[in-house]
Length: 362
Length: 276
Image 1 (cartoon, helix red, strand yellow):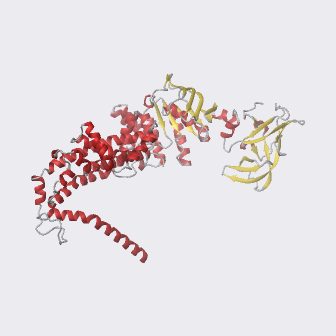
Image 2: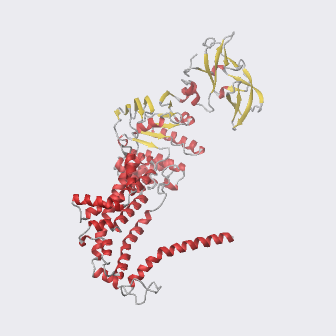
């Protein structure tokens, strides 16, 4: 069992910069938790505090009910995979992987067994006698993973381990890490700025911004029920479209974009009153070109079309000049520089408070 | 094609001229050391002179306390080297990795000491050593040589550590090292080129130094090689043959040390450790 808990944890640097503000989290045993957010949101700092590489300014961190605030990294029973691999360049792959075990005075036969086993799992057996400089980026990251695995720690920490790899390798390694988690059944905390990685790997996702936790939930819950505009905009690619405007209730409720004549009818049970200022959020995939009974249609001017094979991204703008993107099926290839009719789905609309950005529940 | 040939010829010409300027004095010393009598000047251009003899070398080791001076010099230089490498490697690490009060001022003051000519420091150092009772002792010269070499070597080490990624130590600390072990087992091996430079610089500072040694080491039993060499020159005559032979013998340990350490003077030791 390995449970990690952060209670009101903050990190304030000497120059009074607050990197992490009052974060409270509980990572349950065997869970794959992903910390995601833009650069500078405090996700890596939070991970480094769990690792013991950063001092904690306030709050407590416990691993298996033991407060580890003042425990050295080596005594926390954790392993960490770094973004830049951090392999020991003067050691061979085998020595790199065995280093932690040797320091812990494991029997040499046990070290050999563990290293060979991990190397087999990661497909790096033939590189065991090479130095890191003779390996490719993907192989180096596998060695870094191997170095963590052989230790059989209570908790694995990953600090953006795939961000230095090319796109294809990243997808491949993503699957391998997920598979590894299923095999090892160990608590894993994973930091990334890539929301696709977060969505595809995590049991739960923690979305952070400016050192604050915005939302902790399962990937699909975060996607479908974001708590605020930031989370809604951060999760999902292409990002959610936002329109600032107000509610009108001339007969049936509708949304009118501020400063333009762009309006969209809303569901009749929309609870917001007349003139309520809101931000309307529409995910690109909730717009289509296929006519559907009872759904509103709008003609817009398409300025850019990006076919990516299985789907098409169509960019257009409303009168306010704000870009809007629709994710369409590859069968629906709109004409560029022409007006096209798009169908909207009011049941998938998201509303956010115009001032606070908090989600408005209907 | 023609321009390229001219450029190449000019380059070689310049290189040859400088090689001759560098090598000629050494060859001249070789010639002097081999001449049968103590003659400094000769009209002959032969490197190996007529009636060449090794008698100066024999005399050096049999009739003069040359071995004694060499042992003294080796002792002083090795202690200075060990002290220099130990202190510079740890102090450079502290300056590179830790934040502490006075860090910037410390680095600047180390740099400032390099701006004063060594002779200017002679008098205060001499007074200091008298007060400490270290005149006419090896410890006296060792302290001064170490202190003279340290500012440069600390900066060298700090500069090199700065190029070693911090994440290597972090990985080591998670793997099971404390800060010192991470330094000793991961960082120090990677800093081998800077350690070699530090070692050579410290050794050379002590090995060929005359002015400080002449002030502090008054007892001839304690003389180091430069003082011994100087003793071949008196008011009336100079024993040029011995002088030449001794000068060449002084260079031997330095060449040996350089050859032994040069294999560590390689770049790219941290290749493959991190993405970059």
